[in-house]
Length: 367
Image (cartoon, rainbow, N blue to C red; front, side, top):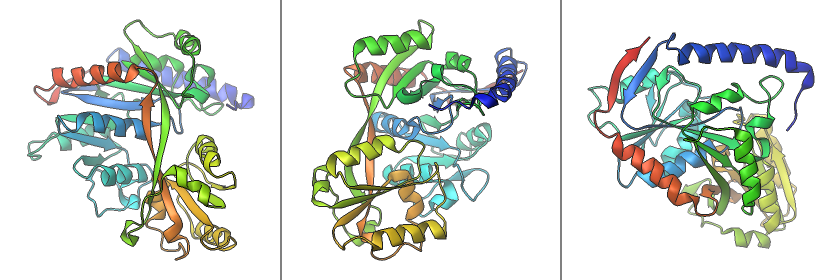
């Protein structure tokens, strides 16, 4: 974790502004809209990837069989504006890469995008919506204090724990460490699968949470690879078969590609990694570089691997060469809790949803 010490004075000022904003909301001096019914927020205190999308997908799998479940996302870097209900025909450019990914993975789940979460809720739970969801998952809404959320799940990456970080622009915190106190659940994500119990207790101690706040530890599991262009009718590829390729070309536009790089190297030591910033909009020159890189490799000797999020943006790019398309695969990931924590986590979530089913909608505004 890199801290820009020269920017610490600016970080201090920014932190004061955010603390004052949170104080205004805590004291009800700024309006808060209270929504009844099961609203579950998956968020963090930092910029960059802490595993919000895999956690949101975990919740969908947990809840969708018993309750109609929907997802509300900002739709980061989309070309559109305002409230949109995603359809399968929409592109990542229209709704954002993560909403596109989740809509295509969970076709029966409604996915909505809107940067204004309160306005989105008024649409989702309006009288005109004849089939409102029984539970709504809000992706990356922890800083949206304008709405009161019954269940806040706060994620912190094991490799850059929030108590070691600093405020922007010196570090990656977008609100002060004190913001953790609003969460009902804190999940330490991307942990080593073998994380020892004493190390977990040390993290819990340093998080300095209230007794009623629950802490869980999770890791990322990598699964089979699926073709980015399903219309080509290509088979999925198990990770165990990656060893048959002489080279793996990795295309990644995510916050921390290192864990994925390490995973792929376990199966194919010769990894050629092309890395880009998080949510990177691939330009014509980027695609040309990808095409040229792959053209230098022996035919049928390599595989091109990307993340599901990047696949959403690569799929609509018409500049990809016909040699790359049939070799382009997305690796799927899931969240897995360490030890026996999964049962406890699932029970907390399902109990909350079950107890808050009545009278979904806007309760009253507070001042």
